[in-house]
Amino acid sequence: MNDSASRIAHEVRRRRTFAIISHPDAGKTTLTEKLLLYSGAIQIAGSVKARKASRHATSDWMEIEKQRGISVASSVMQMEYRECVINLLDTPGHEDFSEDTYRVLTAVDAALMVIDAANGVEPQTRRLLQVCRARNTPILTFVNKMDREVKPPLDLFDEIEAELGMSVVPFTWPVGMGKFFGGVLDLRRDQMRVFAAGEDRLKDADEIVDGIANPALRARFGAAWEQAAGEVELLHGAAPGFDEAAFLAGRQTPMFFGSAINNFGVQEVLDALVELAPPPGPKAALQRTAQPTEPKFSGVVFKIQANMDPSHRDRIAFLRVASGHFERGMRLKVTRSGKELRPNSVVSFLSQRRELLDEAFAGDIIGIPNHGVLQLGDTLSEGEALQFTGLPFFAPEMFRSVEVADPLRTKQLRAGLTQLGEEGAIQVFRPVAGSVLLLGAVGQLQFEVVAHRLEHEYGCKARILPARYNVARWVTAETGDGAAADERELKRFIDHNAHRVALDAVDAPCVLLEYAGELRAMQENWPKIRFHALREHAGLVFQKQLDG
Image 1 (cartoon, one colour):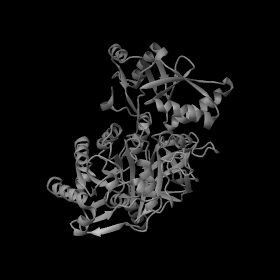
Image 2 (cartoon, one colour; image 1 turned 90 degrees about the vertical axis):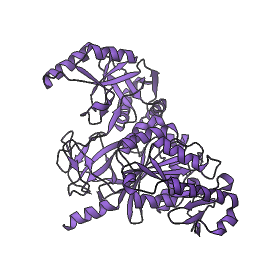
Image 3 (spheres, rainbow, N blue to C red; image 1 turned 60 degrees about the horizontal axis):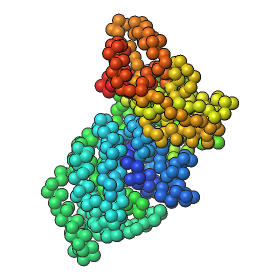
Image 4 (spheres, rainbow, N blue to C red; image 1 turned 30 degrees about the vertical axis):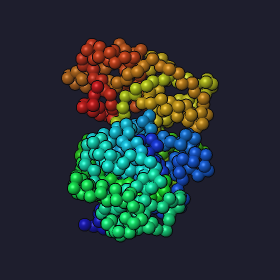
């Protein structure tokens, strides 16, 4: 093995790339801050709660996030901890932005699920879990807010097991809760970490008491300790032991308890991520499967973010490195367009703070400044024609038409919507017959965010008006008589339905309908047309099993 190959292999082994997922308000962004604090990436952690505070959470950088106290765009942070390079992706918890989260989950090797101990497993968590389960992503579970009045831990344990459909292995167990929260028993190390209400700085060291059965604990914590010790005894008999293979296959989840706002229980999670989460694995492309330790570079764009720096109209393409060694200034080819790039100002992230990057390896998330050359789902390589898959767009469920308040700003509106459409924040449709642009989204909040960003980032006030559509499907033709016949059939369909066909950001035709009943009638009338509820970003692949 030559030096370069062994260095690539060594660097890939050091990488851990994971996303934090949860229902809104479970404390995900606060936990992200604390993980950064523990790794030494930031000195003082910002909390999301203090909305008017001068110090906002590092990962919430967009103006609207600071106003509302919720995360609407996924952010990326890179840090080093215990010889490992950790790429951490914080995702929006709000269901209206679940697409962004879905795309982020395609770029990670593990997920950390945060559960609010008072509410247990909530709907949005369920949805995200389905995505993780479909991809067999390993999941670690962190039960947060133990310093409040919460559900009994055994109930939470049962609920998570039932909801997730996977076995749960407690790594830590809480002693008491709310005002009587004494700390956590570390079941693997046979010790107790004593809780102290922490602040936003790192404490020198938590108080550790050796031996879960230590009589000093009974004397100090009384009934809370006795109850916890009884529960642990019960779990020993009922819960399975940790099985690494089952965890890596997404069938078992280690469980931790703590309070992120108090810096408590966070370190155990960080240690577990380093010890248990897998390094980057192989990635499937249409042509072949790429191995992370291959010498040649390849990567896929899973997110585009406009205006990360409002003073410069910039757009950053977030790229997950799939294989090889990236070096600044190397020649890269975009598979979809065949264009060549030589990115010189590639960046790594600590949320909005960026650093110029000289090199990156499989598992890393890098940002490439992008002026319309890159789209979501694009594959970059050193020349090989690879097309990575698995990055879908969902058919929108809500529609609005959009008009500009000042006709002189029509150009800004179009430019703004094109960029926001590329970013995937909203889907923009151009009707074949008609000039009014249509916006499609999964949730109402997306329209509000788009209106806010059009005004503040592009300087144009837009009127978002109701539209009559409720159902959208992308259309392709399958005649069985070759590509030319397919093309003719599709054109015939579009001409016949021009009043309700629109083109999306990559000019893929989409039919817009008012009722689901119309779709059924249309499917009967046009047997050679296929209607898709999902399309791949590159516009190439429509997944058959998810057609509807």
